[in-house]
Image (tube, rainbow, N blue to C red):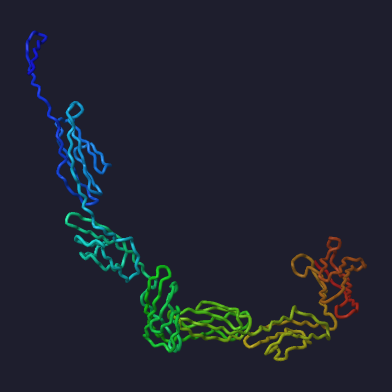
Length: 499
């Protein structure tokens, strides 16, 4: 017992007493021995430190584990001793205390479901676990498979993950694996093969992309087989081995007989003139495609109806295809050459001359406007000559006007004119046709030259050097040479001028 006297600042006296008791030495308790399933965790609890700052230090045999807390969580793989050292902290000199706990490891079932696998659609796989103890429980993702058997038959239709959980008396273990399902590429599983009414042979084919083929009904191993005398509703099964994954596919092919199609081709006209169009039409057939060709070759079209302008006589051939059934028809088009000709410009002939009108064209029919039907005609009189020629329906017409001059050129010479600018009879003119040379002089009564010209289209306006001449009688002299002869001709006379 210890006492202490204390006096305050104001003189008050007080006494305190202390009882010193010794701190006990620490004890160590690691708890009872225990066991744990392999791969699981077990907690260990230590006690025995007296002071709040007491310490716990864990080690192990086999060595390798160290911890500094009262409670630890361990997951040994073999049986292990865990030793705990307990102290009262750094301020106490009491010796440490020790305790040991044994953690026995319960071995897990030895099983492995193996790696993920791939199977073909429709195939199955058998899985047997190698560990015989415990209770089995199978599940799947996507859900739908549950089993308690140690051996299971798995036949998924889609990618599936399978889980196996084994419960022993003390432990639970699990593993999983995935099955990927490969689908073949023969779609659909059934196929209808059409053939046309009247066909004695048809060919059926399996899809490409397979390593090998086998036809169940015939035993053939080719991709395509030929069926003689097909029967409606006949069934053929083909097996194909996939080139990428080795999976087998099966396809069922049934024969379906189609009615024969009928094709008719018509032409808006079968007798053409060159340069004309013709419309060719094919009748409408359900689900049909059309293909046009020609004889001679050179024309193609995929339209049902076409407009064409052939250069020469030709045969157009049309083929229709509806679901594999074909039909063909043709049309003959005659192209006639158009008998083109042209007589040229209108023509003037001299007296006594004739002109041979020859179109120089081959035609079936010739028709002149005077009723003649020969290919040529001699024109010996003035008038309009017309010719119509035709080849079949191709008709061409042309005409020419022929003028035959009289033996002596006609004159129209006035004897009076009035150059007063009233628009009537203001000029003195001599009208001549078909002359090679021409000259005209006008004189007054005293023989003075008033006007002269060598142009048959130039007229006297009653002036001399730009001045009006007086009224009176004037004399004219005209000389000319006709194109029809080489003879120089002269005409002379008088003309009266009034204003």
